[in-house]
Length: 393
Image (cartoon, rainbow, N blue to C red; front, side, top):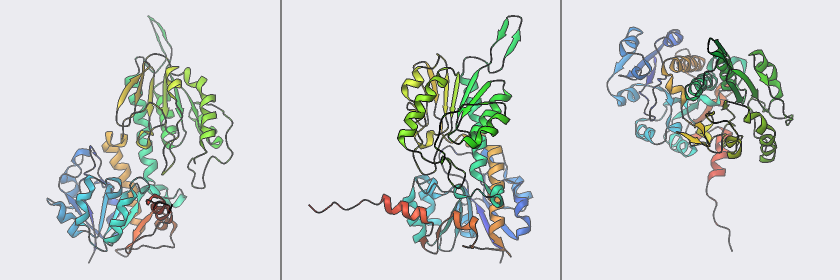
């Protein structure tokens, strides 16, 4: 009996992406799998049911039917990343089933004991290791690319001036000055997009190694003395301590004062985003300036950021909107679907899903399996989060 993969509609609030697109189905064509999909699951991303049916997908009306018929469930937001609305799916899972998608294990870890207790195998896309073999499965980088692009568009729309330098009969218009804090995937895409729009761009990152990448995009790299171990073994920036960030803020204050737009992208997986822009730094910016905080989902890099909202403070617009990839659902879905389809293809062998703990890609993304939470860091995090009994007095 062939492996059946199901794609239910997303229930995360305001989510418009879908986990699988018609084009990505071609990646799975030779894996010998059957596909089920909840009717309308792709419509908000711009993909009609008929497009899936042309690819051989069986579109069903009932969400329960998707779960009942499928061995593997593909989602953008799994239960861990969607604890409120996703709770309704918990009774639909059965022992031996597998769910793959973004799981946010360090923010809502308490969902995982329930999945484990039901015997559900879960794999988190955001834990994909940054190795050459897994590049085609790196969904975090895909979504960061979209977020970096959209952040610049939001800034350009909110800024009461144009980005490019223009020479007109009415005189020369100076280009906007954009400063990007954090030169990871989102930051580099923000730099490239702002440059394409004609802005003068500068950037800063705690990792000196990214200086060449920043300059290759036509931006100026702002140098600040940094800790030599500012990057972990996976290539992500790591937390450096509040004293370091305090010194960093002092050194960046003068740079920020000269900018029209500041885009912040600094985030450390599983932790609150570091504070980079203080209230005083924002107050020092010019009237009409814009801050776009891509770290709003983890508390924000700006002291004044209100997650999910756009506010104004000291004449500066601060944009803390969440889930920016969902605002570009067509291409976000295409990119994510290619990532997750490549991952599924990696896991399927001879028509069956194989959990190979010797494989780094599988081992690093696996959260629950055979009734247990198997990921060491998630297990440790859960123990740390458990309330401790009061000391005997």
